[in-house]
Length: 247
Image 1 (cartoon, rainbow, N blue to C red):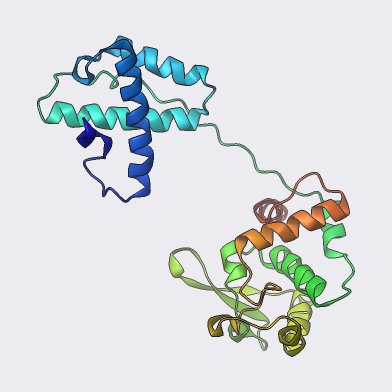
Image 2: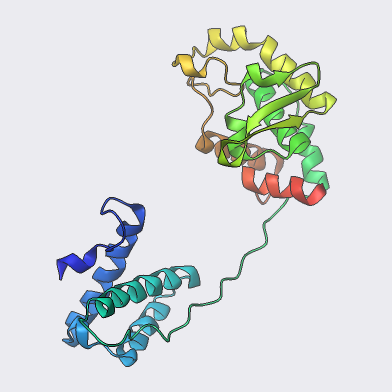
């Protein structure tokens, strides 16, 4: 039975196998309660088990994940002549409904970009907001920006997009001005917040801990300004959705 806890087509260390094992363990516990061997499950028991998952108020996507694991398990048993029919085969997955992203209003964007710059940290934060708004860059692209990739002549910056493919983002005069100010103040920033790793020396956006800004730190920055400005929604991804809506 233990051999069935690992997906036959993946490595045991994989993230997929972690969830697969959870799914199969839950199903085995159910079968032990009703005293039914795994090779004698019919579509009736399969539907009964899935109805229990629904009663637990699992999300549709989660139930689909469980169902995929059971179909895979029994497909394996059929292929190895352990059973004749896959009891989960005729059960269809729930249709996935994609939620529309939240976005900021024009007034909220204006309030965010108009925040007063009082120190180096607020300069960093407003530069982040301006670059998001001016370029529509992804969060990963923004966090990995380096000063050496800024083309001052063309007022653009090179980033690595999806698949590590380089692309250029053109800057508005305001965004370019803020980037320039941030670069000119780097020496002062380092005196106040020494850089810990040499690899982060050219990073445009640094944390007060002296490292390249992380996704969690970026979320914290948006949360802080959300509270400060009284927004009901926040997150870099929502701000990105706002930019795409306005383009």
